[in-house]
Length: 80
Image (tube, rainbow, N blue to C red; front, side, top):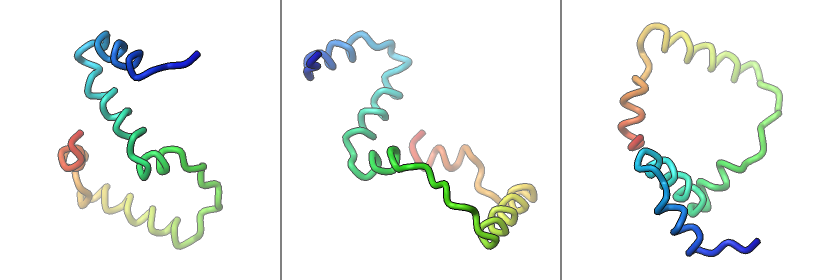
């Protein structure tokens, strides 16, 4: 089956308004070669090194102490 841009336009017109933002982000990701390469990169199955493990533990402790950046601030910065 060959899909054309016209087919896509017809699907977009049928989208519920609540899904427009999500589909926009998906299409944007597919049209950005850098973002697409990040999204399709293979899973990193390399073993975690001791210094990486220590850094993750330190970050978790910082978050537990309230020293992290609130998720809402990150979402706002990323436009989410």
